Length: 313
Image (spheres, rainbow, N blue to C red):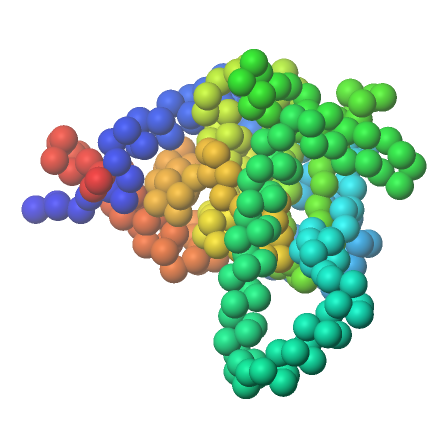
């Protein structure tokens, strides 16, 4: 007897099912059926990647091409490392810092280096998360100023001051702007691809006028689009990074509408079934958790099921 349960709740399953239908109406089913599933292999990214601005820009161009976005219509802007800016702003004057260090040396034993690093890491994580969640993603007054002095604005903001990407230039709203911070996080191509894919989904859906940005689930639908267009392996494997990695890439803080690994697993299973892929090679590249959720979803979709076989809450 078949007893496998979905990794998502029934409510989540119904939303994903409906999301696929909405994307079909907006983009056409052929867009999904003909999409190349992009993998983290030299086949798709043949150039050596070193985390430099040039390498990031080339990487971004490749993601644009795979998602069917005209690279000439989107600008990529590099911001200063947010954590370095935080540290510089909070650092005491040199003389003051020197006095504090001497006082600490004279009055108390030095803490173990490991403990100091852990404390600093936790403090940086919390500060980065606070700034990213309150400013970069949701604050409509937050703008990016380029080296040429150009400012950006959000394409759409509702009466509750909730912003919906993409950002565009104030002097040329037809051009989208995607911003990325300098820092060690640029070495993480999985998370970087997931971030770019999400932002480009905004460009396609909202910038292209395909959906009303007033929809409450615009963020979720943008994430689902990454699966629909073949970037789902990166988006799904980067899902946990959106929740945990705030230190190196503040803009990848878990935001409203981020899909869970379980939801990605089910969405990828729907994607494979719709394309007639019984044993897709790309499933081997999913992270351990997502691959398990994908397998459970494939099994569930392959058998008749009743209400008791729906997702666990």
